[in-house]
Length: 308
Image 1 (tube, helix red, strand yellow):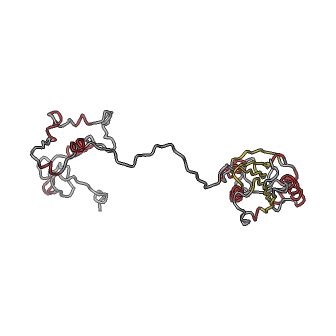
Image 2: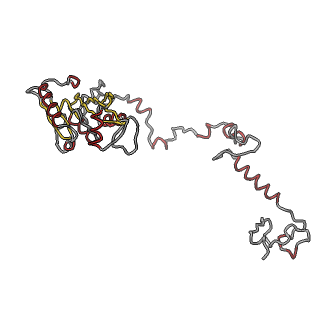
């Protein structure tokens, strides 16, 4: 009992479930009442009724769950959060729960790391200690939980609630000099010097500078497009424009491609190839093709390339 740090005058909550032996529970409560004395209090609560018991927050200095010898209590995230809620700031939670040494899919028994993570999410700072289950405890797990495994351990975790309540706030005292409520004094001469109204723009005595006069001859020169290109733009054996090219290389390559397509088209010697076979020579490259407009590229579908 000394490990729990219980002293006279403290309020202690003992959580039990159906796996807790009645005689062991009664013996534990008697020992706790002897430690807390007349000024303290020991409350006993079933884990299935804890959420409906409506205990006030910050009601207990110590919460014990699964500590009763022979218990195989499993704690859900909601139960852990409720235990943290009813603890006073600075209070401690002591629980004991069977855990798996490795991750098992669809297992109702958690690993020690997952149990500690659940305690952390509930707002507690935990210290864990692994202990091997006794043969009696393993048999209790099988009977009350219907769970069979050869890799079970019992983990005892000590969690402490921070010294503040969840959702509490405090005003910060900042050493910032107060600003003067009055406006700073302004020199009338300086205010008049930097004031320019619409009437002053029409006054012939005000000389305005033409913005074009600020440019010299070098500023008016049109830059060479080659100088605007990136150092690596168009380099390599195959010239290729960058993605989202803005230096003009993409347009230049497009023009070169159009010129290559025009030059690759067959040239007509007589100039009548586009009129049809009636006007074509015997060696005309367009012989057998339909008539087309001058300069138009002839494209034939698959159906035209096969005999009917």
